[in-house]
Amino acid sequence: MDMIPQLMEGSSAYLGTKNLSINANLSSSSRATATQPPFSSSPSANSSRYENQKRRDWNTFGQYLRNHRPPLWLSRCSGAHVLEFLRYLDQFGKTKVHTTICHFYGHPNPPAPCPCPLRQAWGSLDALIGRLRAAFEENGGKPETNPFGARAVRLYLREVRDTQSKARGVSYEKKKRKRPVPTLSASSSSAVASHQQFQMLPGTSSTTQISKLEK
Image (cartoon, rainbow, N blue to C red):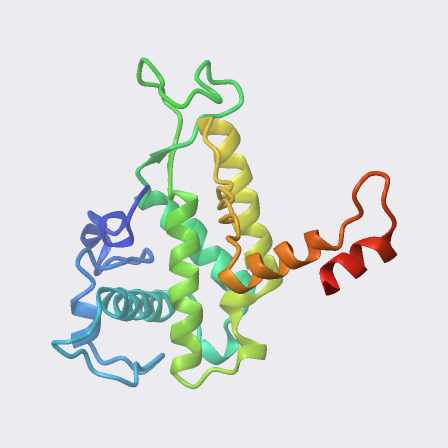
């Protein structure tokens, strides 16, 4: 599964051109004058790997908006623009997605190379959207206007997951965890034992058993 830092490799060749670009190491975007969208917190030595990756992804998306033609402001960014961004990232993908006419369609381990296109893996896109969705709200965005949580984005990710699952012959379904068998405590065991004493024995009545217990 592709990682987001890796899927940006090789993108530095597009910087400074008329085409939309992403910085290879994503560090120059943090040094550039980020008029939109600004990141509110500065990186610290104790930042977790997740926070660092989220910051890089946010700066990358900000650079994408600035390079957009015409330039796009975050306040006017919609789910459609997020989909455009995800499709743009496919050019940096490293996951082979077989087409329906490919002999290796649905084959998890193809024995030979094929001309099928490389795409971003569903897992990478899903994780990326999760980080950008959190970053949007951390930088003042409202949950109800979060473009990364739009229904169109969720449907797109589901479509990518299903398409890649069939094309690659892999399953993305989460394995269900087996629930542990509950063990009886000492109090529960004693309660069960007491209850069993009142069970009727063959050929006797409940009144007889109760009188025996009273004795």
